[in-house]
Length: 237
Image 1 (cartoon, rainbow, N blue to C red):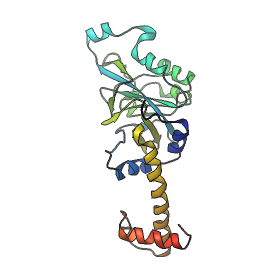
Image 2 (cartoon, one colour):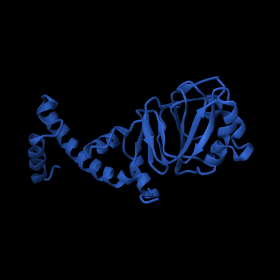
Image 3 (cartoon, helix red, strand yellow):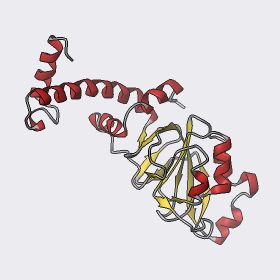
């Protein structure tokens, strides 16, 4: 891959809140990249890893007949690409449809996968909670998946929750949701995030000293620039 995301870069991205990543992409006019509907099934977990993608398609008898069987079925093929620095991103055909549960995802636990993200739902959450990897989904469900959809594509460019996900993109999740950072933008986002963190720290310092409307400095404007330069000159930035 032209822009492979290193393990070191993943660590740095994982230290940032998802909203900071969104802001970093926005500065360079990249589209919003939060996966709509993917919420933490088990709150309080942080997730970061490179995307391994799995695409589901609606059920049809001929599709079911042509889908590879047993270990060659697409979901099991996708699982084997996962490890501690990979996140499985599964695009469902609907928010309440199940992409899997207990037995299937036990393999992800064995592989110590970095996490699971879907714009659909998951089953058997009582078991998944013990598996140790973060799970972000629209909801939990008791429904069976195969009656509605079939796994079909592995490591393709997919749409998940209205967002394009390319294999190898950085996937970061926290209690606010899941963000896709395109692999080509990871280093740039880290640079922007570091700059914004310094500026926002100065704004908060100033608002504590002189309470008033954040609109004077935020969104960033000429007042913000001057404020930052003043703090910097005094060694406070």
